[in-house]
Each structure stands twice: as C-alpha cells, then as structure tokens.
Length: 439
Ligand code: SF4
Image (cartoon, rainbow, N blue to C red):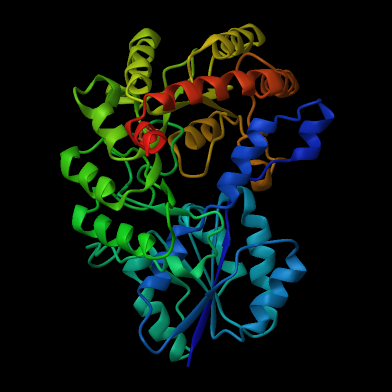
C-alpha cells in the first residue's frame, strides 16, 4: 500500500539567544510561541483527510532534532513525503527535503512560501504545489504511483472549486486537546503587509454544514477541546453569524479566532460570539504611526478601534491587540509612545511583532523597488522578530534595539501579570464561564 508522510515546518521561530542578549526573557511571548508551535498544520491534515482508500499516511512534525525527524520519516518507508513550510523555517525544510531525496524518496513541497517562491523551491524537491493543495492532491498521488511526478502542480489552473474536505484530526496527539479549524480562507481587504489574505486564492467562506462536520470530528476525539480558528478574518464576509454561532454553541467548544475591530461595532455580534464559546479574538490595531494601504474600512481612528475593543471585552471575550513595530515613520519616540500606550491599555493580551515583508506581499514589492530589503538577511530572519529591511527614519540597529527594548517592557513579568488580571476580569463576564462556575 502506498504511504505518504506529512512533514510540517511551521510554528513560530524566535531567535531566542539573540533576544536574550538584550535581556528579553518575555515569559508571555514564550507561552504564545509555544502555543503556536503546538498548533497542527491544517493544510497537511486536510490533504490526509482526502487520501484515497488505498493510501496510508503519517504526520511527523519537527520535535527535538533534524536527525530524529529524519529517522522517524525513514522508518515510515514512505512512497512520498509532503512538506509544508513557512518562510522563516523554509531553509530547514529545503535541507530536510534534499536529505529525503538522497534516499530516493520523492518530495512534494507546498504552502504559502512555496507558492510565493516556487522557482526557488523547485531544486529542493520533485514537485512544488502552488496554491491550494486540495485542488491538485489526487493528481499528485496518481502521478506518484505512476513514477511520473510533475515539477509543478498549481491550483490556479483548471477548475478551482473548493470542496472543503474534513481534515484528519486524529493524526495528531491532543494533550492538551488543541485543534485548528478553518471557517474561511483569505480576506477581501488587502493590507499591504498581509501574506495570507489572497496568496492561496480569493476570499471564500466555508459552508456551516462543513464547519459542523469538522466540529463533530473534533468532538469525537476530545472532551472539552480548545479550537483555534485558522482564519484570516473570521467575520469579514457576508455570512450571517447566527448559524455560525449555533454550530459552535452546539459543539460546546472553547475557541479563539482572528478578526478585525469592526465586529465590536456590530449590534449583538460580541454577545453572540461569547455565547457561542469564543474566549479570545486577535484584533489587528497594527501601527500607530502609519496607515497601511489596502486596509479599507479597517483603517480608523484609534479611539474608534478602542471603543470596539471595549465592546468586545464587555461581552466577555478577551481581545489580543496586535501591533506592528517598524512601519514607515517609526522612530525611537514613537516606539516609546506605543509601549506606554500598551502598558496602560485595556487589552487582555498583546502581540507585538516587527514589520516583516513576506514574499509576494505589496510591502515586499515596495521595499524591493526601493532597494530597502537587506540582502544578507535570508528567509531565516523572517521570524517577525528580526529586522529585514532598511527603516526610513531609523538605522537597522536603532530599530532592532528599540524593538527589543519594547518587547522587554511589554512582555515583562509585571505587564504580563497585569494582562492576566484583565483577562480573568473579562472572562468573569463570559456566559460560558459563568455557567461553568455555577455548575
Ligand atoms: S484585515 Fe487582516 S487578514 Fe485581512 S488583509 Fe488585513 S491583515 Fe490580512
């Protein structure tokens, strides 16, 4: 029976040693990094969910070392290895793929980075998948069985109807029970820095019937599961939220998602969100000094966004405020102002990262045109914590130092404790937690 081994190179990469040199220990950030690293790679699990009956599969995420990973993959004796990688980890993925090919095993490489940089990826594998793997997966497997893998498979040619197959959630160990689920793909907005919003295809929403199926599959595997929605912007489309909320409410899960601040202005939405089991939303406030092109109605005055944040948290849903450091016009003073704002802000959680020009984004193209990308900083620097371009009002070193100083303050033990208190306070208003406390 043919066997495919699925290998994700995802998760958050933090050059911890570099940061530690600057005295950044950031316990809150490490927790978040770990939580992200533990999230399963939904793309590969979805491909596993649509395997033909005569194929078997295994899922081998990077654990302790590349040697261990290689050993475990070779032990599967696979007919094919499917690798997905994010930009910061793509060098590791390339070197792993070459090693696997050295054993005569074909490798197919896909994901956001391979889609953006397919020419770059080609020498490291037998085939590159461009766009959505689901659209071409059966062809890849059939060609593999014939020993006739093509150099490229693209979901952008031919029919692109998406059938939303249910991911094979049982491939991953769940302790604690943490799952990812996607309810929509892409985003109709086009923020200049955003790589995920349209690279794999246009914006689409998953039918609620399919979401229910996936929630059932998750419910069959774990009691009280935690679900992270791998959405780009959950409520940005035209879907009516009631049916969506009912599906989550019926499944009785706790979930986290990403959305934009405008949900706080929609009557009934924050309360519906809380009642359906959502405990936290990540909301991009982005930059306090620069309005990125492409944000559409998401670009607004800070006060308007903060009113929305209050409305969401009043309903019992914690808000993770997401900020980018290093946009155009950033200076040491503006970073200090941002830190002061965050330390006094009502956010239950905060995500602070550096502006990063991921390949194929408008931001990347602009900085490339302006010759501001730093050639010596390869993809392994695209971690969200390393400077990869020449800022317009600071030197690279100044931005680096100011960012590390900001991280040290925003993720200090005291600031983290303050946010924990806010979060507990917000959750006291959450209908699900109120019910649980009574029962
Ligand atoms: S709103 Fe969010 S998901 Fe949509 S384009 Fe902007 S950053 Fe990307």
